[in-house]
Length: 247
Ligand code: DGL
Image (cartoon, rainbow, N blue to C red; front, side, top):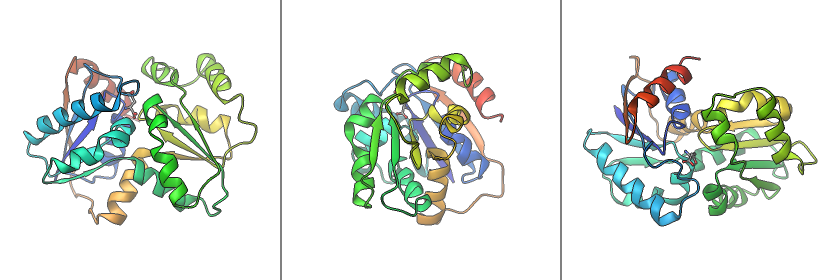
């Protein structure tokens, strides 16, 4: 089975990594819209327009299924994408919520949702969590985490003081932290050190669980082959993939 994986840029490689590790597909065609990243600061109509263009591009690679790795696209454009394709398209928000629900026994558990400005403004994570009876929610847009990750500062002073800046008003450690942005799994070690008792919800693991449990997708016997496409500077995407997909 050939899957198209779409993200606004390089960040969705964190989701591709989980899909590759679990051998869910024979082939992944990854498209990162590196010419127009970030999406997280854009208006919904722009996000939908870019997403439909990405869909047309991936259609030309004869994909059987599409995974939207980007939380921002999942929040704003999923329905529009689904209306325009004959194959199944999955986003990361519903799987993320399901992963949180599966891991949290108590409905009064506290959940910290981290995402881009647009994802947080959409209220999509909150809406689905509330529908599942979880109301003890805090949403935050720690926008500086994105450039910090892109600089490769996965640990150290800069990240530590940025976490202190964003989390200063969080008085009690949350029971779960939703990493609602493709970049955040790369700093999960630092976030886990900051919130040692919290369960971290990673979109990549969540979509693997979701596809296996809800969509009956079986693991392939073969190693997944990966084709990388970018709207600008595919070399950067390739070198990021070499770095991030390694460990
Ligand atoms: N891929 C985006 C997300 O997961 C983060 C980067 C961006 O703002 O485009 O929401």
